[in-house]
Image (cartoon, rainbow, N blue to C red):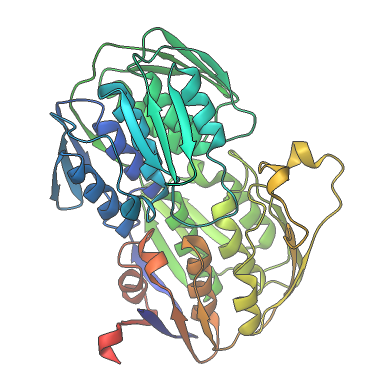
Length: 444
């Protein structure tokens, strides 16, 4: 198992880039499989999830050529209709191949998706939507696969019971080649979805938002090739922004778009964090003693659930008692135990909620008495070194942030999860002043 060794207490200063958005890049690979013509994608983050998706595509008989942070995809023929279980277990977006497989082959065998285990993350909302587009889908518990078939996809109107980012994208991908018009109601609003829509329209699709939460897809006979460049990852922007502020540093992030992180900047104003929007990016810096805030995660355009763990680390350095309320996933505070090992003063609790079915985006049936939906963070606290681990991508990033500000030398295991979402994370942090090394088993 690989690990990071982080010497805390270093002030971060300088300029950095962020990678193309992970939550766009992986979906563009699936979209490229909807046409037999060449699709070129630029600004691809070279993360482990990307290589897993490429392996799946090659297994399906699709030509994939990786260039310098780019990829050329040519799906002239799809030779298989089953996604390998071992690869699908590594990347949740593997389930989205159901769209090109049904559209072009008429059959798909898709494993129950893997990736980070952030609560139940029900795929039922997606499966029910695809069924409405004239597909028959059955789940076989003995092999762990969804078996889907269609004699021809047809447009339909479908309303999502709860907000689902991946579900919205999968339905869009399925509908673009279906006959007739598809209307998606209560569709997710994330900018990554609109970026995927831009790509599909450049490929000849007819997709548009008719309102904030409604998307219309008019099916076309075929799509064609195109060139597309992915925008910067807003989750990475937040990670490096907090790294700068928490270490009392000053870091300029190139090409950071303030509109994509508007709610984060508003929270940063409340916390007295420093930032300056410039023409070609955003500067983040330590301005004053941080103060406690009340933060609630929510669906777009609210405060992202992916920012929750890094924000909790920032609040360990703020004066007062901060509240962080998670409403998107039912069980997303697993990292707290490691922060406590580093000296953080955090209490888990369940706030009183009048209408939980309206507030919480997860299925209430998946909730358990042992799960907590909020934390109190007491600060400021001097964190110290410890031996800790990562449980998912963003929680792992939060642990690294804590190690940057902690006294002493922190060892972080399970960094393979970080590699799923961050390219050369330790190298980019080192370039702006961090002391962080990756050690492999053979280095011991």
